[in-house]
Length: 182
Length: 297
Image (cartoon, rainbow over all chains, first blue to last red; front, side, top):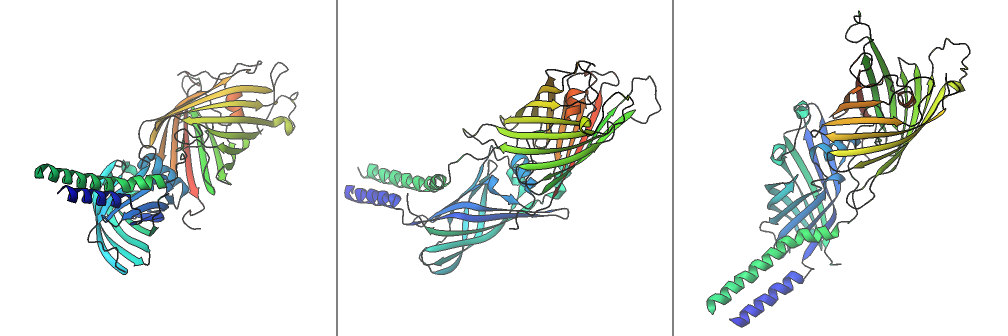
């Protein structure tokens, strides 16, 4: 019994130290859209980082809120200052799991990614349908989902409520390469 | 024995699981550049109340700026509607680059035509990064008002005034920002021999946010060597700034009806109190026009 335990422990330890079973994306893009009859707002962030661990099928995403670029330069200031309060909540993160993920499978697979998305200090449970494409050692994850603004405790003045959609659609695209520990 | 090793096994597995979950975000944390981000703007508006703030607009943004002051004359009763006197300044301010802004405007009541250049030299960073925002401001104004006194020399160059400012601001936290503005005003029109042509002043301005879009502001200029030939007072203002997307509104109470730097710093004739014509109601509206879509390369 003790031998089995020792074996298991070493196995777990080696697994957790091994880095070749992870892939990383350093310049992923996330964009969001708000369509209303008054105004269309679009923003894009091309510096989103993400990492996938094949062993546990776990995925993490982290983005800096002030890296979102808007059509109107001043919107970025308003977004960071008055809505998302990026000096208090500088990052949005996602931690989750790719359900039924098959890392070895070449080509495309459509999977559900389930996890916690944290933005503006509020954590929301999300289930996102994601297309995973593998070619050689690189992975590409693409997908889109919709989320409600009101879930994130963001203060929108009544006068501007018509300018911001209740449902925000989010698109993402991450390209991963093998992760090398520095 | 068996029981304890089993629970130990579970413990080990739990521990490894926890490490996996926490690990990924920590790994990303380590990947991301560790540099201090630029702090959000200290004032949002290009003016605190009447004076300029350290704020400049991003490139290719045009501000259409309209400022008004309303006040009453000391007469007991007048026939004027709402206010006895008003002055308006209409200006266009264009951001040539993310740092440099050029603006020009005209004021109705005192006949001042003015132009300015504003350059943001340094921007505050978060954390223990660069601590302040530093903006250089240079303005020139031309006084077009008629002068009855024939003895006053009023060539073109005599009618010019210059204001140089070093604007230093710090955003202390989300709600509170402070600005100091060492100022030099150079003017010559209609001065007596006793008056200094170079006038030094120190401006101070604060913003306190009352909500995500509304803030309370106050601004004051201490003049160190005021004009000798007439009584002038230091300009002061208390106001509320309201940001509405592309439209920004400022409401203020002030003792100065002037809206150009050299005029309100050196020539404010009233003290701040509630007797006419001392109290001015001020209203500034800025409409922001973007000429460039930042998402298109």
